[in-house]
Amino acid sequence: MAALTTFANALRFAANNCLKKLSPSSLHKTTHPALSLWEPGKATYRTFLPWMPTIPKHQVEVPEYNEEKEKLMTDVIKEINKQIATDRVGRLFAIVHICGKQFKITENDIIIMQGYWPPTIGDKLKLEKVLLVGGTDFTLVGRPILNRELVSIDATVIEKTLSHTKYHFRMKKRKQYRRINFYRMQHTMLRINSININGDIDKTKEVEGLDRIY
Image (cartoon, rainbow, N blue to C red; front, side, top):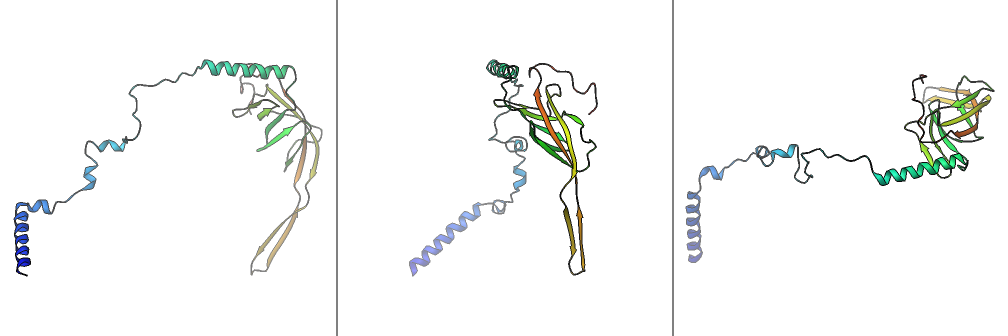
């Protein structure tokens, strides 16, 4: 027991000597984490992170001309023009934009336009808003539409009729309110007569928008 008391006193004496050597400010030092963000090494984190790749000081120019890609594109265009000239494109299909809707069509298809539409029976139309046209081995995609001189799609209005009878039922719970209405929508049937690609696809056409306002 006496040995433990002696050891405790020696430990207390050593601890007091160590604490006297420490300044009071070091024992109660306050840290401000936000201020460390403004240090020179960390202030750049606002615009640049260490793990991000370095930004070159000079402007890097990416060459647009690539001989290999240009040769490949020329060969593809020649092959497509050859198929068009020899009429080996197969059965063409297209995606057209009519009255706010898109339709995928091919020759002799019949599409139905819902709602009122002014054209009458027998009217011949030329669909000019063509988003895409394709054949067996190729597809031409417009950005956003193809030139109206490159692709021509002819259609004819064959019938104007009404849809089947539809109903609209309304009810309010616990109000003894029930209503049912029957109605029929106007339908205009349009037959696609032909889809043609006129001339070479790389031939410069007239400038769009100078002779008409869509």
